[in-house]
Image 1 (tube, protein in one colour):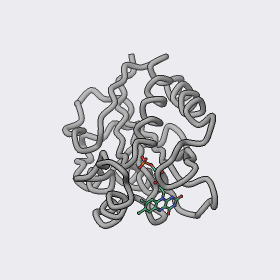
Image 2: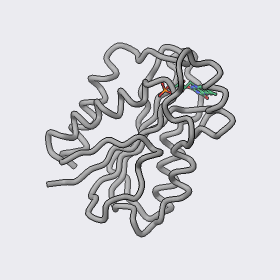
Image 3: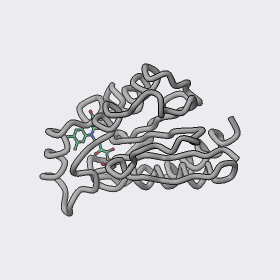
Image 4: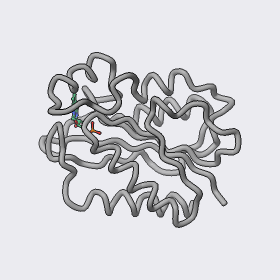
Length: 166
Ligand SMILES: Cc1cc2nc3c(=O)[nH]c(=O)nc-3n(C[C@H](O)[C@H](O)[C@H](O)COP(=O)(O)O)c2cc1C
């Protein structure tokens, strides 16, 4: 059976919810673990599929400064305070990256801005020698702190199901 990890970064919890929904979908055809990015090392040697997701910050992957910005906006402690997908990917050893990967992000629905953390993460994984199992996917939130737009968790489950069939 396909062994998949879903690795996510999340400040306010929206990307975590999407990660969990993607994992639910994947479980229809894969053995899946979900890991918050600061606890997602090392990758197991028998991994078949790596799914990586994070919030879009300033048109791309978060940085320490944008995470600090999120922390000042948040009404409770942010989840991924110490590191993000950008730093995690930079530290990844290409030899441990499974051939197949897929990336997603969360982004604000109105106004729809250019730039996507998922596209940036996909570029890095491609450079590490991986092959995309799907196009980078964005899931929409109503505002900086969320909530997710209605129907996005169901769409995330469906995306996960489709990934498991590839
Ligand atoms: C510092 C900062 C910069 C952001 N920049 C963008 C952006 O460029 N485009 C966008 O669509 N959303 C942007 N957002 C909104 C985030 O995408 C949103 O907070 C995120 O999807 C929520 O996910 P989370 O709860 O997992 O952190 C930004 C949010 C923060 C805090």
